Length: 378
Image 1 (tube, rainbow, N blue to C red):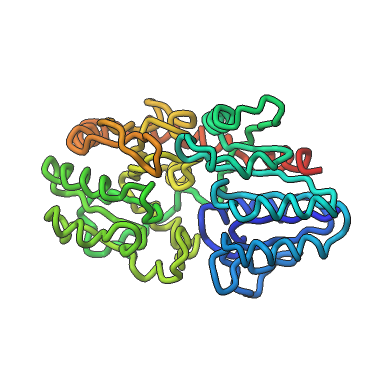
Image 2 (cartoon, helix red, strand yellow):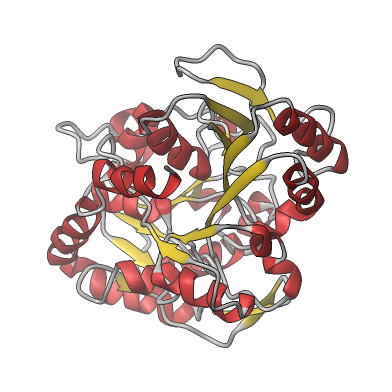
């Protein structure tokens, strides 16, 4: 049996690579191969081969899908293929799976981050080829099941783990990362600058918050030139001089990837007085659980995975407004003024929430999670 893993390369520092870093190396399997999205042939420490999924074009392209087919056909007669990514991105891989199955015995296991609400056939077409589907949360499972409408297809829930590397540090390094803001409170955001992360609303909430308390400063650990032009938005909202950007950490051009080492990110989290996410939806909400592990209070939307993992006793839930359309899906958005007022009102009483949130994220132990993966993949 050959085991092939397709996802963000464990050599990256993206959300999906956190998963591949913690799962793949710790599975007791022989003949492991990794088809790595974003892998650029760097030297690495892993005891399995990593192959670049994207050469000359996106990994989703027809050309790279055909490269992957040739790779699978070069392997032995029985293959287990494990994938992690949004299922609609595998459109050009559906025929690859069908063609390889004409010559090989191939089992397909899909780990699916259900960020929002599926509502189109194309959202789940790839999953129809799967032998097993795994969601991070019950929210994810129910949405896959609803759209797939196939009662025979097994769907499991295996949560994302909590990386013990993220924790409260003995020394706060605010003097290192925010030397000009030692007297300010830091509202921290660690999210990719994509449409779903809704960073326009982040700045909108902040602009309302400083009307109530001008001691806050907004740190955006995101590519300022991604989907939203963050500096232009901050300028138009009149808060540019109160925002801190992280340009040097975002040079690769890969959404979600960063040049910020985990050691530095832990120090940065520990400088936050409050973590904020205005995402339209999350399959897990990795940066929120990382912040909670560092004992930082968190403010989130009360929807998708967030409302399943956290509750009113462990997080400040932002105030919803009307829904908006995102990729054809109706998803929650936030009332900036009411959300800012809630943060202002509830932030001073965050200590008990911090303790509860830390207890929650600590329960998601990678060692226990990998036992479930070992059983399912074997």
